[in-house]
Each structure stands twice: as C-alpha cells, then as structure tokens.
Image (cartoon, rainbow, N blue to C red; front, side, top):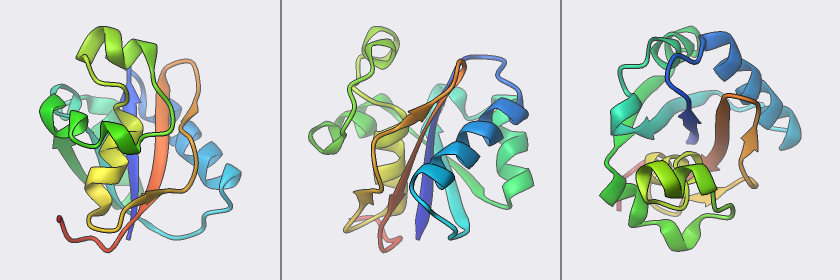
Length: 128
C-alpha cells in the first residue's frame, strides 16, 4: 500500500499539493496508486488538502502530534518548521509511515516546494 504524507501551510491550494506529490512520485519512480494521504490532525480540514485527496481518489487521514512523535526515530528528514510549530521532527514522513501500516518504509526523504512537503511510504496497510 502506498501512503503519501503531507505537511503544508494553511491555505495551500490543491494545485501546490498535487505538484509536490507529482515531484515525489517522479523522484522515486513511483507509479503505484496512492491509497491514502496522511497529515497532522490540525490540517485535516484544509480545503486544498481535501481537494487533492479527492482528485487523487485517496482517503484522507490524520494523526495527532503524539502519534507522529511515536515514529520519530524512523524519519529521514528533520524539519525545523515541524519542530517549531508542532514539536515533532517531521509531519510528512511520520504521517506517511503511520498511514502505510506495519512494515512501513519511506521511499526516500521528503520532497518540498514553497508551501508543501510530501513523503511517500509503503507498507502492508494494517496498523501495527
């Protein structure tokens, strides 16, 4: 199962989110369908994020900062913005790992544009 973790600024349009997802898929030569888009709980109602998930036919899920922190040792990239605003080392990478379930692994480090970070992870789809 392919999961996409997203961190974004408030008000980020769906087009920015979709652009960074395309960039990540290209960077990691990933053609699998994205099953789920995951983010931090405070962003689950962001219109651009909801629209991007709808356009991609993916389920949108969210995780608390405590849940994101629980996989901190598995992230590849520490985000100063995530540390400053959420007190976690990563939103995108941690959310992707959590959403992809047991045996999760990142395809690579997060990819970013001016408003959005994106990480892709694969796993067996069932939560450990």
